[in-house]
Image 1: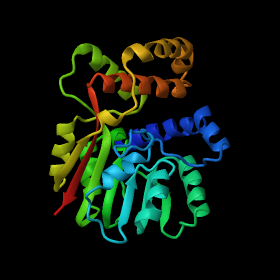
Image 2 (image 1 turned 30 degrees about the vertical axis):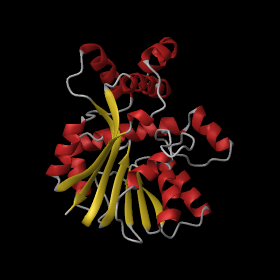
Image 3 (image 1 turned 135 degrees about the vertical axis):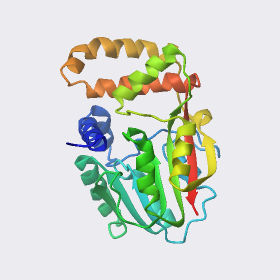
Image 4 (image 1 turned 120 degrees about the vertical axis):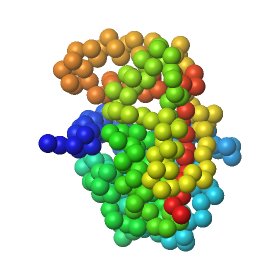
Length: 283
């Protein structure tokens, strides 16, 4: 009998197999971008343009990593974060994805960049991480897919070297939502295959239960490029009309992904969900 984590891994793998082929990704690849960050574009506090690369600088600020760190990207997508950071920081980098399509594209881009000896993408669940040990483990908008986030963090924390860091960058709902935003949150979770989506306090409790100490946190909502419900409502209504039958037939993943993203935007704009960075350290 498959475990809840195994069932969830299959759901997420199918989800990203569908998303790999949507027109957005095809257009990016046609423009010459073989891999790309699939996380949020943030406003740059230093005055640069909004970019998905901003989080890379913010999440490493203040971490006293070794000169050649051993790093695990727990849910790396196409490996774009590693491609950005490995040349800057040195060290050895391993990324995990459930998607063979993402791994193939990521490893091809890594090889083209001349980084294959120290950067790689594995098709593997972050609930069965490599032995390590790692000086840094991070999950950017990936750990929210876990069926048991506390168990996921325990498994990852066990792979940290003494003094190693574990970073969680994700969408964290506020506790005790009123009925209407709670309904939007539930639909977002269903459409983005996020069965739990812990709040901030639950993530911190899980980090501490895994033997880690919280050393820093940041609310990234002020840096998000998001719109409120009034702005996204027309597109939501259009998607719901057009995708009703495909979704009933199990063919509406693209529409579900977009609907979930629009719902999340509205929840973030209204402050019901906060995009946060949590940094914890093993003693």
